[in-house]
Length: 485
Image (cartoon, rainbow, N blue to C red; front, side, top):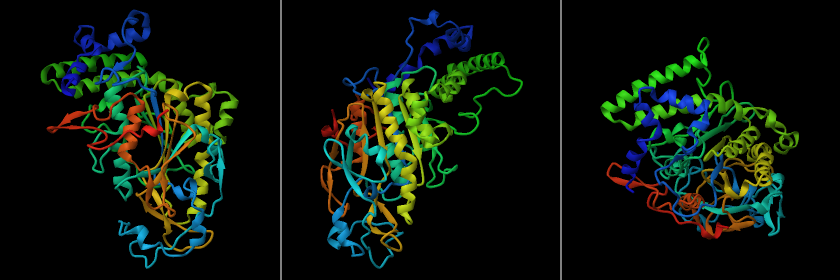
């Protein structure tokens, strides 16, 4: 069906119908909460524009662990022992071959090779190489598909992270989570279909700025944008009733507001008014569902220990990984967990060891926790950043200290669960981890594969805007079939 017609059809929802009634939308919504049996014959989920998946999905939901700032594949995943013999030698011009570099190193007189100072060991049934700074992740390597040849055209942070999140280096396109919310709809009436969690590092954020467009809805309805949960105070701003405002008073206010919004919609037909009505009602239900979600007191000591000592501190990466599992249990479609401070142009060995100390145990715990609950098979977990790091040093080079510049030509991400084959390493890079030698994986290919696990043909999930059909993968992308279970 034409997406515009489908969107118009979706506007005439159950909520819209009751909004026209004399009692108003709010009263009906409140009645359904007070006595769900009265509405037992009504669907408990919201259909997306697709109506149904294009084919049988393997994954129902996605947890995306995003390492903002670009972690060094050379120090974590892409083992290059031959580089020890190249220490402080210049990168051969035949390897770089005139490829673009950033202004941060373009003025250097040389490009000296900086081998990783970390030891690598083989793990799992297939002997995948993993750095010593990821011991916990190494313990779940047989559940991971490690992709060593991810590549992108973007070489600076903001266009690169915008590109991988939205399929375009230019702002204004819907994010991955928004596309899934639009296409597949919601599986949960009391929580958003797309939730974003921001992780603190040493009590703060720091690093490259993250803008709301990275989880925005672009030209789609705003109901599909990600809802960002805060680590301090109310998880969502203004979720709690103001002092002096009771729940009954808030309900009455929303009822009256719904009537006014409905009158305005009847006059001008702007679908964003329907989005506003839906968002007010979602916020009302979140007053109960979000506090219950973020209260981890019902988790066992065994589970808390699995995620590590930071798990009880709201806002930490460990807490957010546990929260991501709780969101997955509640059938939230797409959860994005951001952690910054991976932009290591100098002092990389110390900084990356610190970062891995923060993320290593929680990442492994999330895989183990989902697996033991029988959820990994239909939950797709993704880990990685916006690009990789260069083999050559930025700044001063010693045997124990170095920095690395941005490198989009090849870097490493991993995927697990949700229809992905575990225990494999996909692709190969050259000896310098500079160019792809075998099985390239462009970020459009990666996004096409993510959609495929959810039963979505990336070429058919489109939206007509400004006279053309848009999609997450633009006009590119091939499913990486070798990754599929």
